[in-house]
Length: 246
Image 1 (cartoon, rainbow, N blue to C red):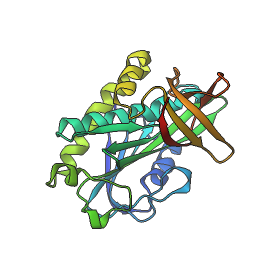
Image 2 (image 1 turned 90 degrees about the vertical axis):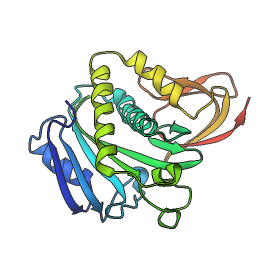
Image 3 (image 1 turned 180 degrees about the horizontal axis):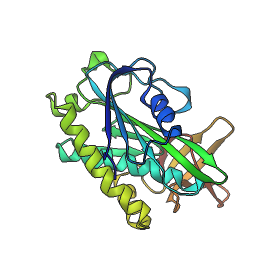
Image 4 (image 1 turned 120 degrees about the vertical axis):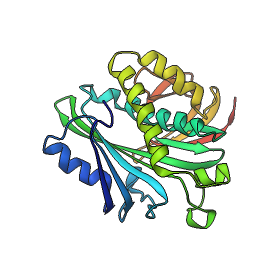
């Protein structure tokens, strides 16, 4: 399903922007757009994604999942899991998912995911899922707090080969999601998460700050936090900060 059609471009403003244009024009589910570089790569919360030509994987997937909007955090985490598995396949160590949409190697961010939706009522008409993976960047080419595959492996690797592994993993995991095997997916996501249950965390969003203890993920991939008063709150998105253990 994923990668039945692959479109490759040299340098674009943003693969997500181009994917939106094609999705509105009826481009089918599973189409993947790759770019050699981006001039205005976008991350979550309006952040930019550094996209030097030939140094990383910059791509977007067009999905038509027929899911309620509430289920979309699980789609993002499924893509994150596909990246984690791909990096482990090429022998990168200490790879983990940072909820809600990042992949880390050790303490450095190696990949980010941006999921954008077109809604039809309370259903998702289509979704564009963009990802950026820092592959062959040196330390001098990375922003603070970032990591790359080449640094982790101490060698550069082939971008096309890694892209193929990501698509292969995502194809299988996305099929599991659509076929109702979300419980198994969530177990794999939990196992790959850098979040320790019982760890004290803070989630900052545009509208509020929530602090408490990480209790796990709900069936939609949202984070469940146990507040200091004993109640639990479900958080759909935000910037996660670890504060320590209980």
